[in-house]
Amino acid sequence: MGAAVARVVRRDRIVLAVRDGGHPIQRHALLVQEKPNRLGALLAVATEHAAVGTEVTVRRLRCLANCTRGPSAAMRCNGSWTYVFGGLDTANAAALVEGARLLAGAVDGILPWRGRPDVLKRGLIARVPPLDFEEVDP
Image (cartoon, rainbow, N blue to C red; front, side, top):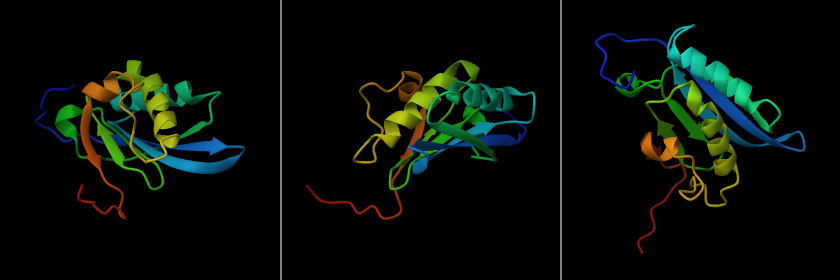
């Protein structure tokens, strides 16, 4: 699925909410590709299963427009950077949940490199700053 495709496919997205004591503390979006019974939908189901028993809640959404490197996922917390990943499959579901947990715990809103699952290092498409981000000259 990582190769370029000539057709546009529907995508599913997943939004993860990390909860602490029953109160939402961070939000994450993991956006995943394709129609039901296709790779993205299967990734969505696998990620939902991987989140069972954790503080992570998974919700599906729609398209990331990353057709050539799908299935795709995006991860965002309140006030954090947004991370877009591609070239994913069902074997990466637990890594997405772990990444969501790492991002939720990142004080600076940046997904830590150390401890990040390898697929979230190799599959990184983009990192987008939060809306209120202001670059500070060193």
